[in-house]
Length: 486
Image (cartoon, rainbow, N blue to C red; front, side, top):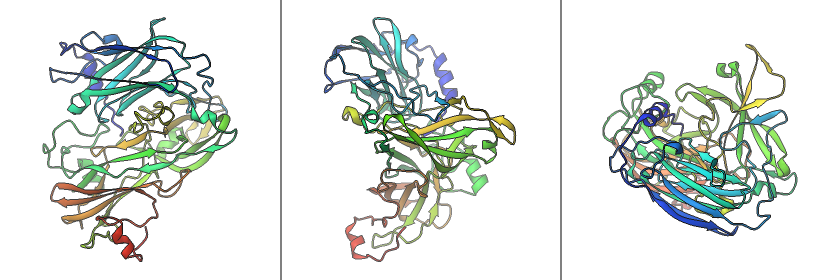
């Protein structure tokens, strides 16, 4: 999701709240083996019910931030690989979390909470120097994950800072892990190409209401309880597309492949004028890479940033009495573009090499995050152009939540109450090179009754060309082999 909570952050940073309860000084733990994982958990009691606090470590007191000290005591030679530059010649990346998808070896430290709406921040300090050696203070995710690059043995202090954590009470709690990370991309045979693999998760969290009668904005709207508003479409969605009844839902596109999904375009004045082309960077062993033309990009005015235009497509199929979806969709989305970032840390708690540091985050897609030493591009507006990177790291998913602008299927016409399949297809034109295309479609069977949506079944991810399954299971599909293929 692309929530830009600038106003919220500014307000939160200026609040001076009385302490709700004592934070925890967690027992010190020692990391002594590459096969070991340190676990801990904590919770913000937030007895005031305010849920807001300053987002920085410097504002921490014994009443606000949890603290864990870990001792790194690992054998010499545990971290043989350092970072490897993986951008085209003459281009450097400047993401805050890490300027490369091959960060090398180190200790991966992560915390995770329930949803991507609320927020914890993460700081790691080297006790011997008193300096912060890693931090994650960005928005729009359900986790923070940082890599201590080839750390020396010694004591490190980890601070969990509750920024705002009470829109969803489940987000008051978090879990944490620390473990040795060996960069898997640097252990591939030299020159071996490594590709991402897209998995589209079944759509979830359906709404036919709950947005206010206002124009859409990049922050979306989850600030009031369900049932506060009867509107299902924002005012500009009605004005621009004629949408008066919108089926809104969350969409999660995961990278389950070995390689990162890395997209890049040139941030130029004419990119805002419809002349934007997205390149996919395809990595290979030992840091080599090649560009692949992935298709168009576009500046999305409602979200206030650039999208890769051909990332996805949403469709709605009516389901008959036999449980089978119709041959053609009865409704579809207007929105097909995405700004890709790491939102859903779905591998948290798994094996070390399955997890990755968070690389892509806000303000990716909003402002250039690289620079070039090559001569400036010549555009109709004169010289200009800076590289801008976006992507999805392995082990992470990109989530667009139901309340974001144009995150819906228009059901204003020809959608009476009944059973339907909501179908989300990623990479529908195959513009992104992947290692497999077998999981690019996510499907949820739902029942619509007025403004109520009941989930009947979430199907496993499948290929974009596989026939849609029936609501009651795949056995019915085998009885009717001549069904239309999509």
